[in-house]
Length: 147
Image (cartoon, rainbow, N blue to C red; front, top):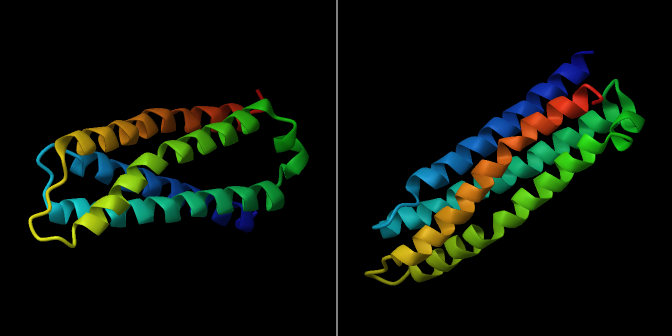
């Protein structure tokens, strides 16, 4: 019972930190972005990746070690929808990540300023993720109740 509670806590903690990193990106991605801020975005993106991996790892631990057992999850359509949505959100994170890496490389040059069009494009992808991520708790609730 304690193990299940600790795994749930770690899972939720990873998810909350993931959302915090995503919110930080959404907040910083504004036209007129300073070079230093553009470089900081890569750090938030790394945190986002680490939290996504932690959420996935703790979720898998809950699946394998939790009291419901793998059969409950594997036969549940909402589990598969939740995993598909998680993958889709991960795929949507690739364009901003690539942009941040380009900014890191360009940031070595004095006078670097990110183009507003690139900032808007990266922000659009971050906002797509933010809008999709709100469906994960719904899918989790439907899954947990066996609906």
